[in-house]
Length: 321
Ligand code: AVI
Image (cartoon, rainbow, N blue to C red; front, side, top):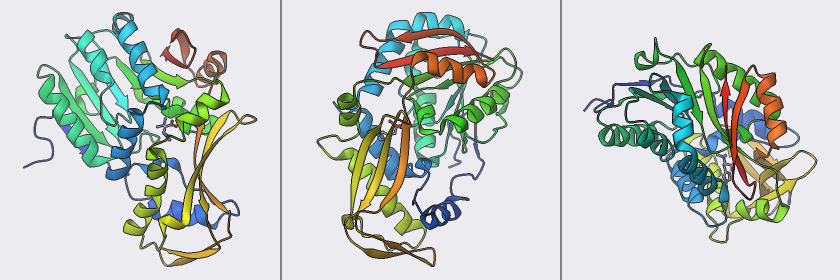
């Protein structure tokens, strides 16, 4: 059975694994060990992330969903039926359904994601549920420029980047990414983007330290992935999850803390850990509305409309190239 059954197009640009070994080895060799957060999302990590999104403590998903549901009429008008909608890092593609339900005349949708099987499943199910929509999938690292498939050519393009994934980039990388997206979309294009807001420390820290330990499992799964794919010898039980708010940098940091002094093999190399030493696995930057507008403008976008909830937990922005 071809990979693309039910889909108008499916392309795998092969970005998923080609830099994993090099990035992990380089990151563990740093004086402050760090691994890029994009490597959380193997098949297991993607499923754990879907469970995070359903957690009581993890307010971003629910709040953004509510904003999409409340304002989808206005969003649909800004996107326009003639556009090709392009989702960056769509994961389970649950959120875009809210927009698609409000846009029965939309013709084409492209989902770009790094997790191949997860993308294939989600895009195929979406194509079955929206038979009049041409659905294409591109398995790619969306931080690199992506040549969009035929269904998105010769159309105005509007990007959809929900979930505050922009917060997982360093601010400079976020601006670079937005510039790349502006290039993918082209003149006249738009971008609907979800951005988590700065707020009370307790609310923030609870969202990354859930009582069921799903976020801890998500963080620790990185070690299991390294063991499987890079001949690693991590003992996940000798590490613990740690997440805290860094007010100076306006970000939640996630770390894996070594519970003891230990040595670990990865891809033929040996790495030493002191007790209490950490691997910095993720930053999740939080913005103010003004701070995000400044970033978007710096990257060549014009903020057109911003929606926030009553508690000012989360924001969704429509920007134009
Ligand atoms: C995908 N990204 C926006 C999530 C976040 O909140 O930064 C990833 C995540 N990490 C821990 N929980 C969720």
